[in-house]
Amino acid sequence: MKRLSASSRPTKCTLSLSLSLHTDPVQEWGEEEDDGAIFGITLRREPVPQSSDAAEQPTTFSFVQYHTVKSRRLKAATLERLVTHLLDSEHREPDFLPVFLSTYRAFTCPDEDSDSEYNLMQL
Image (cartoon, rainbow, N blue to C red; front, top):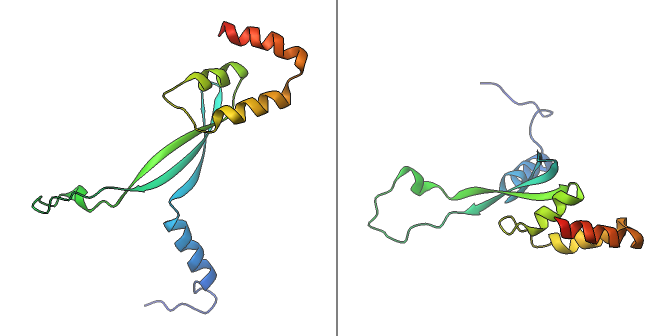
């Protein structure tokens, strides 16, 4: 059997860090590019509701306690793609509209707004 030396033993700090990584229900996963847009990917662990029927025979899946849900949040895109995402009711993000409007106001001039409004209406 291999003995651990004092220098190779996990410290309290590394143990608590590794435990927190495994117990954190939300994890930033990375980015995906799709049709000219960049999405941030988050994985969220959610508990699986257990069956209340005690007479039900256990299956392989009856021992599953959590499942992973993948969330995509739009991070960058062209104006046309941002507006398309804004109008997409299937993938609605709760804070996308206020973020979109404040960002749009910060990066456009009033003269550009009238032209942009006309162009947005054409979409």
